[in-house]
Amino acid sequence: MMKFSALLFGALLVATPVTAQQPNRALILECMACHGDDGIAKDKDVPHLAGQSYDYLLRQMRNFQSGKRPHKEMKVMSRLMDDSEMQEIADYYSRLPRDPKS
Image (tube, rainbow, N blue to C red; front, top):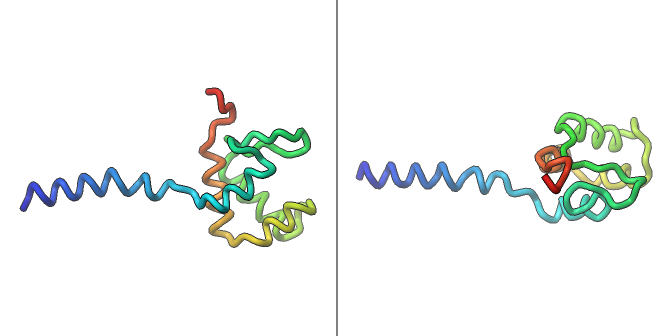
């Protein structure tokens, strides 16, 4: 029984972080349309999100939502999200490398 418990506990330790790290793919796909698959935008007028700090990204999305930072498209997109979704997006993009080749 002790071996089984240890094995089960070990399996949970390995499996849980992977599941917890998976972003909401549909949510991230909305962002990728403008900000690129790797967080590096192809359009020079669209900011890169990859490698930006979590706090910065979250603050900017909240600013778009409140109207404190004006931007037509981001005002609409941010108002479709709740705060937990904004946190998920900020977490996802803050973990990407600034240089996708590295």
